[in-house]
Length: 315
Image 1: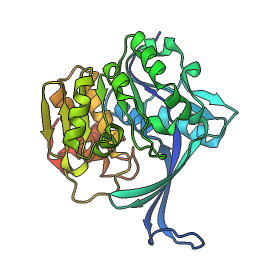
Image 2: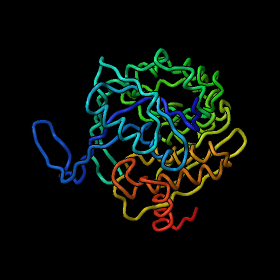
Image 3: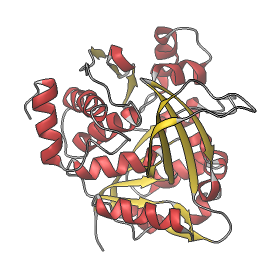
Image 4: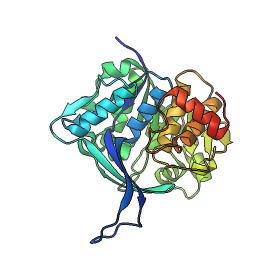
Protein backbone atom coordinates (compact mmCIF):
# COMPACT_ATOMS: atom_id res chain seq x y z
CA UNK A 1 0.00 0.00 0.00
CA UNK A 2 1.12 3.54 -0.76
CA UNK A 3 2.74 5.40 2.13
CA UNK A 4 2.30 9.11 2.82
CA UNK A 5 4.30 11.72 4.71
CA UNK A 6 1.14 13.49 5.87
CA UNK A 7 -2.53 12.65 6.19
CA UNK A 8 -4.67 15.78 6.50
CA UNK A 9 -7.77 14.91 8.49
CA UNK A 10 -11.08 16.76 8.61
CA UNK A 11 -12.68 19.87 7.16
CA UNK A 12 -13.17 20.52 3.49
CA UNK A 13 -15.01 23.38 1.85
CA UNK A 14 -14.76 25.99 -0.86
CA UNK A 15 -13.96 29.66 -0.19
CA UNK A 16 -15.83 32.52 -1.83
CA UNK A 17 -13.42 35.46 -1.49
CA UNK A 18 -14.64 39.04 -1.80
CA UNK A 19 -11.99 41.77 -2.00
CA UNK A 20 -11.96 45.58 -2.29
CA UNK A 21 -15.28 45.90 -0.50
CA UNK A 22 -16.97 49.29 -0.20
CA UNK A 23 -17.38 49.37 3.58
CA UNK A 24 -18.98 46.90 5.97
CA UNK A 25 -22.27 45.07 5.30
CA UNK A 26 -25.41 46.27 7.06
CA UNK A 27 -28.72 44.43 7.32
CA UNK A 28 -31.15 45.79 4.76
CA UNK A 29 -28.43 47.42 2.66
CA UNK A 30 -26.24 46.33 -0.23
CA UNK A 31 -22.59 47.09 -0.92
CA UNK A 32 -20.21 46.12 -3.74
CA UNK A 33 -16.98 44.15 -3.93
CA UNK A 34 -14.68 44.84 -6.88
CA UNK A 35 -13.13 41.36 -6.93
CA UNK A 36 -14.40 37.79 -6.40
CA UNK A 37 -12.65 34.40 -6.34
CA UNK A 38 -14.11 30.92 -5.83
CA UNK A 39 -11.38 28.56 -4.72
CA UNK A 40 -10.42 25.58 -2.58
CA UNK A 41 -11.01 26.52 1.03
CA UNK A 42 -10.81 25.23 4.59
CA UNK A 43 -7.76 25.46 6.77
CA UNK A 44 -6.96 21.78 6.46
CA UNK A 45 -7.25 21.79 2.65
CA UNK A 46 -5.04 24.87 2.36
CA UNK A 47 -2.53 23.14 4.63
CA UNK A 48 -2.62 19.95 2.57
CA UNK A 49 -2.29 21.69 -0.81
CA UNK A 50 0.59 23.87 0.33
CA UNK A 51 2.44 21.05 2.11
CA UNK A 52 2.22 19.04 -1.11
CA UNK A 53 3.53 22.01 -3.10
CA UNK A 54 6.48 22.16 -0.71
CA UNK A 55 7.36 18.54 -1.49
CA UNK A 56 5.56 16.41 1.09
CA UNK A 57 3.56 13.37 -0.02
CA UNK A 58 0.07 14.22 1.25
CA UNK A 59 -3.29 12.43 1.35
CA UNK A 60 -6.61 13.81 2.57
CA UNK A 61 -9.24 12.04 4.65
CA UNK A 62 -12.32 14.24 4.75
CA UNK A 63 -15.99 14.40 3.76
CA UNK A 64 -17.58 16.26 0.84
CA UNK A 65 -21.06 16.34 -0.67
CA UNK A 66 -21.98 14.81 -4.01
CA UNK A 67 -22.18 18.21 -5.68
CA UNK A 68 -20.28 20.69 -7.84
CA UNK A 69 -18.40 22.17 -4.90
CA UNK A 70 -17.31 18.67 -3.90
CA UNK A 71 -15.99 18.15 -7.43
CA UNK A 72 -14.13 21.47 -7.20
CA UNK A 73 -12.55 20.37 -3.91
CA UNK A 74 -11.48 16.98 -5.26
CA UNK A 75 -10.07 18.39 -8.49
CA UNK A 76 -8.31 21.26 -6.73
CA UNK A 77 -6.60 18.94 -4.27
CA UNK A 78 -5.53 16.59 -7.07
CA UNK A 79 -4.17 19.51 -9.11
CA UNK A 80 -1.92 20.40 -6.16
CA UNK A 81 -0.62 16.85 -5.88
CA UNK A 82 -2.74 15.78 -2.90
CA UNK A 83 -3.96 12.17 -2.99
CA UNK A 84 -7.79 12.09 -2.89
CA UNK A 85 -8.36 8.35 -2.55
CA UNK A 86 -9.45 8.77 1.08
CA UNK A 87 -12.12 11.41 0.42
CA UNK A 88 -15.62 10.38 1.51
CA UNK A 89 -18.70 11.51 -0.44
CA UNK A 90 -22.07 11.85 1.29
CA UNK A 91 -25.60 12.57 0.11
CA UNK A 92 -26.62 13.71 3.59
CA UNK A 93 -25.18 17.23 3.30
CA UNK A 94 -23.71 19.61 0.75
CA UNK A 95 -20.03 20.46 0.60
CA UNK A 96 -19.21 23.25 3.02
CA UNK A 97 -18.66 26.86 1.96
CA UNK A 98 -17.06 29.89 3.60
CA UNK A 99 -17.83 33.41 2.36
CA UNK A 100 -14.84 35.63 3.20
CA UNK A 101 -14.99 39.42 3.24
CA UNK A 102 -11.41 40.68 3.04
CA UNK A 103 -10.31 43.95 4.61
CA UNK A 104 -6.52 44.21 4.30
CA UNK A 105 -4.93 42.01 6.97
CA UNK A 106 -8.30 41.18 8.53
CA UNK A 107 -11.49 39.52 7.37
CA UNK A 108 -15.05 38.52 8.26
CA UNK A 109 -16.16 34.94 7.56
CA UNK A 110 -19.53 33.22 7.25
CA UNK A 111 -19.35 29.40 7.06
CA UNK A 112 -21.84 26.70 6.13
CA UNK A 113 -20.16 23.57 7.58
CA UNK A 114 -22.14 21.05 5.54
CA UNK A 115 -20.56 17.63 5.12
CA UNK A 116 -17.58 18.38 7.34
CA UNK A 117 -19.84 18.57 10.40
CA UNK A 118 -20.82 14.90 9.94
CA UNK A 119 -17.45 13.16 9.88
CA UNK A 120 -16.34 11.46 13.09
CA UNK A 121 -14.46 8.42 14.28
CA UNK A 122 -16.84 6.00 12.52
CA UNK A 123 -15.82 7.42 9.14
CA UNK A 124 -12.07 7.35 9.82
CA UNK A 125 -10.38 4.22 8.52
CA UNK A 126 -7.51 3.21 10.86
CA UNK A 127 -5.78 1.55 7.90
CA UNK A 128 -5.57 4.94 6.16
CA UNK A 129 -3.99 6.45 9.27
CA UNK A 130 -1.51 3.57 9.43
CA UNK A 131 -0.22 4.43 5.95
CA UNK A 132 0.80 7.94 7.05
CA UNK A 133 3.90 9.06 8.92
CA UNK A 134 2.11 12.13 10.28
CA UNK A 135 -1.51 13.34 10.76
CA UNK A 136 -2.59 16.99 10.84
CA UNK A 137 -5.95 18.15 12.27
CA UNK A 138 -7.22 21.73 12.06
CA UNK A 139 -10.31 23.82 12.86
CA UNK A 140 -11.64 21.42 15.48
CA UNK A 141 -14.47 23.75 16.56
CA UNK A 142 -15.98 23.94 13.06
CA UNK A 143 -16.46 20.17 12.90
CA UNK A 144 -19.14 19.17 15.39
CA UNK A 145 -18.79 15.40 15.33
CA UNK A 146 -15.00 15.48 15.14
CA UNK A 147 -14.89 17.93 18.04
CA UNK A 148 -17.21 15.78 20.16
CA UNK A 149 -15.06 12.71 19.44
CA UNK A 150 -11.67 14.43 19.40
CA UNK A 151 -10.02 12.46 22.22
CA UNK A 152 -10.81 8.98 20.83
CA UNK A 153 -9.82 10.17 17.34
CA UNK A 154 -6.47 11.39 18.65
CA UNK A 155 -5.99 8.17 20.59
CA UNK A 156 -6.67 6.19 17.42
CA UNK A 157 -4.10 8.23 15.48
CA UNK A 158 -1.45 7.57 18.11
CA UNK A 159 -2.36 3.87 18.26
CA UNK A 160 -1.52 3.67 14.53
CA UNK A 161 1.98 5.04 15.20
CA UNK A 162 1.68 8.43 13.48
CA UNK A 163 2.97 11.71 14.84
CA UNK A 164 0.27 14.36 15.19
CA UNK A 165 -0.06 18.12 14.79
CA UNK A 166 -3.12 20.18 15.65
CA UNK A 167 -4.22 23.76 14.97
CA UNK A 168 -7.44 24.43 16.88
CA UNK A 169 -8.38 27.71 15.10
CA UNK A 170 -11.30 29.96 16.01
CA UNK A 171 -14.38 28.76 17.88
CA UNK A 172 -17.47 30.46 16.36
CA UNK A 173 -19.45 29.69 19.53
CA UNK A 174 -16.58 31.11 21.63
CA UNK A 175 -16.94 28.35 24.22
CA UNK A 176 -13.37 27.12 23.64
CA UNK A 177 -14.13 23.62 24.85
CA UNK A 178 -10.70 22.01 24.40
CA UNK A 179 -9.41 19.68 27.11
CA UNK A 180 -5.72 20.47 26.67
CA UNK A 181 -4.72 18.53 29.78
CA UNK A 182 -5.89 15.30 28.13
CA UNK A 183 -5.11 16.17 24.51
CA UNK A 184 -1.69 17.85 24.60
CA UNK A 185 0.15 14.76 25.94
CA UNK A 186 -0.93 13.05 22.69
CA UNK A 187 -0.13 15.92 20.27
CA UNK A 188 3.45 16.13 19.01
CA UNK A 189 3.19 19.65 17.55
CA UNK A 190 0.51 21.99 18.90
CA UNK A 191 -0.02 25.01 16.61
CA UNK A 192 -2.48 27.66 17.89
CA UNK A 193 -2.16 31.39 17.39
CA UNK A 194 -1.74 33.59 20.44
CA UNK A 195 -5.42 34.55 20.74
CA UNK A 196 -6.58 30.93 20.47
CA UNK A 197 -4.06 29.86 23.09
CA UNK A 198 -5.27 32.49 25.55
CA UNK A 199 -8.89 31.51 24.90
CA UNK A 200 -8.48 27.77 25.45
CA UNK A 201 -6.45 28.35 28.63
CA UNK A 202 -8.62 31.24 29.89
CA UNK A 203 -5.48 33.34 30.45
CA UNK A 204 -5.07 37.08 29.87
CA UNK A 205 -1.52 37.05 28.43
CA UNK A 206 0.43 34.84 26.07
CA UNK A 207 3.07 34.36 28.76
CA UNK A 208 0.51 33.02 31.24
CA UNK A 209 -1.04 30.78 28.58
CA UNK A 210 2.35 29.33 27.62
CA UNK A 211 3.12 28.43 31.22
CA UNK A 212 -0.34 26.87 31.56
CA UNK A 213 0.20 24.42 28.68
CA UNK A 214 3.93 23.80 29.14
CA UNK A 215 3.61 20.94 31.68
CA UNK A 216 1.20 19.08 29.36
CA UNK A 217 3.28 19.19 26.18
CA UNK A 218 4.20 15.90 24.56
CA UNK A 219 6.99 17.49 22.54
CA UNK A 220 6.48 21.07 21.39
CA UNK A 221 4.06 23.88 20.63
CA UNK A 222 4.57 26.71 18.16
CA UNK A 223 2.53 29.84 18.77
CA UNK A 224 1.71 31.97 15.71
CA UNK A 225 1.85 35.69 16.48
CA UNK A 226 1.15 37.35 13.12
CA UNK A 227 3.41 40.29 12.37
CA UNK A 228 5.28 39.58 15.64
CA UNK A 229 6.54 36.24 14.33
CA UNK A 230 6.26 32.95 16.19
CA UNK A 231 7.20 31.38 19.51
CA UNK A 232 8.44 27.79 19.72
CA UNK A 233 8.17 26.18 23.16
CA UNK A 234 9.03 22.86 24.77
CA UNK A 235 8.96 21.92 28.43
CA UNK A 236 12.44 23.44 28.84
CA UNK A 237 12.95 25.96 26.02
CA UNK A 238 11.46 29.02 24.32
CA UNK A 239 12.54 30.38 20.92
CA UNK A 240 10.95 33.44 19.36
CA UNK A 241 11.78 34.48 15.80
CA UNK A 242 10.49 37.64 14.07
CA UNK A 243 8.10 37.65 11.16
CA UNK A 244 9.20 38.14 7.58
CA UNK A 245 7.08 41.15 6.68
CA UNK A 246 5.57 41.79 3.27
CA UNK A 247 5.24 45.49 2.41
CA UNK A 248 2.64 44.75 -0.29
CA UNK A 249 0.13 42.31 1.21
CA UNK A 250 -2.42 40.95 -1.30
CA UNK A 251 -4.41 39.21 1.44
CA UNK A 252 -3.71 37.19 4.57
CA UNK A 253 -6.18 34.36 3.93
CA UNK A 254 -4.59 31.08 4.97
CA UNK A 255 -1.37 32.60 6.33
CA UNK A 256 -1.65 30.52 9.49
CA UNK A 257 -2.42 27.38 7.49
CA UNK A 258 0.58 28.07 5.28
CA UNK A 259 2.71 28.48 8.40
CA UNK A 260 1.52 25.01 9.44
CA UNK A 261 2.37 23.63 5.98
CA UNK A 262 5.87 25.08 6.05
CA UNK A 263 6.54 23.85 9.57
CA UNK A 264 5.13 20.34 9.13
CA UNK A 265 6.60 19.72 5.67
CA UNK A 266 10.01 20.38 7.26
CA UNK A 267 9.10 18.37 10.37
CA UNK A 268 8.21 15.20 8.44
CA UNK A 269 11.47 15.45 6.50
CA UNK A 270 13.40 15.27 9.76
CA UNK A 271 14.48 18.91 10.12
CA UNK A 272 15.25 20.35 13.57
CA UNK A 273 12.51 22.38 15.31
CA UNK A 274 14.25 25.73 14.74
CA UNK A 275 14.39 25.17 10.97
CA UNK A 276 10.75 24.03 11.01
CA UNK A 277 9.85 27.28 12.77
CA UNK A 278 11.76 29.33 10.17
CA UNK A 279 9.98 27.46 7.36
CA UNK A 280 6.66 28.16 9.06
CA UNK A 281 7.38 31.88 9.24
CA UNK A 282 8.57 31.94 5.64
CA UNK A 283 5.56 30.01 4.30
CA UNK A 284 3.18 32.30 6.18
CA UNK A 285 4.91 35.33 4.69
CA UNK A 286 4.95 33.95 1.12
CA UNK A 287 1.21 33.25 1.51
CA UNK A 288 0.49 37.01 1.64
CA UNK A 289 1.95 37.64 -1.83
CA UNK A 290 -1.03 36.16 -3.73
CA UNK A 291 -4.81 35.95 -3.33
CA UNK A 292 -6.36 33.05 -1.44
CA UNK A 293 -4.72 30.50 0.80
CA UNK A 294 -3.02 28.55 -2.01
CA UNK A 295 -2.35 31.24 -4.61
CA UNK A 296 1.33 31.66 -3.70
CA UNK A 297 2.03 27.91 -3.68
CA UNK A 298 1.71 26.91 -7.33
CA UNK A 299 4.90 24.84 -7.03
CA UNK A 300 7.98 24.47 -4.85
CA UNK A 301 9.98 26.35 -7.48
CA UNK A 302 7.53 29.27 -7.37
CA UNK A 303 7.71 29.30 -3.56
CA UNK A 304 11.53 29.36 -3.61
CA UNK A 305 11.53 32.18 -6.17
CA UNK A 306 9.10 34.31 -4.11
CA UNK A 307 11.10 33.65 -0.94
CA UNK A 308 14.21 34.94 -2.70
CA UNK A 309 12.70 37.90 -4.54
CA UNK A 310 10.33 39.26 -1.89
CA UNK A 311 11.95 38.23 1.38
CA UNK A 312 15.61 37.73 0.52
CA UNK A 313 15.61 34.14 1.77
CA UNK A 314 17.54 31.45 -0.11
CA UNK A 315 16.63 27.81 0.45
